[in-house]
Image (cartoon, rainbow, N blue to C red; front, side, top):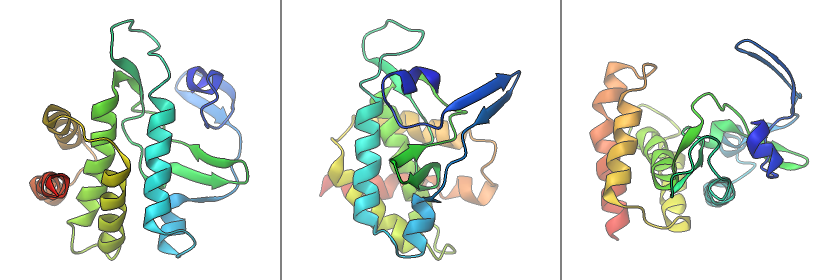
Length: 181
């Protein structure tokens, strides 16, 4: 977080650290997800914001790898990890952050949105679908290999329940079909 903050990326200020613990500034504001759910913000502006946050992040050089094409990636950038503050959006939850491929990072956001969109049990599925479609319009199309890698990363998430894991293929199909149009 300090690395991306040094490049002006919007993250909470790290006030202290010790072992696995971080002390961060308190952020006042709702997450983009909660703003979507309460109707304060629509799916299209949230999608545009996610695309912009990706663009801004992916110009920051990798922390540890000088390999070409490697940049800082968040690997969990979705509406519930963006806090809407008076100073603008602030990205939280950096536990998955790494150096890697910008294409995979963007594809992973699409996979996360699509995963919610295909879950018909979720009342927020229609909002997620609209956000996904707007996000896909805002981002450049990434190679199929990035979508494959993003799906594999998502499938390996130990927090996914077995029924959620079973919907992953539907989510990938939704993205693939949406990108063709």
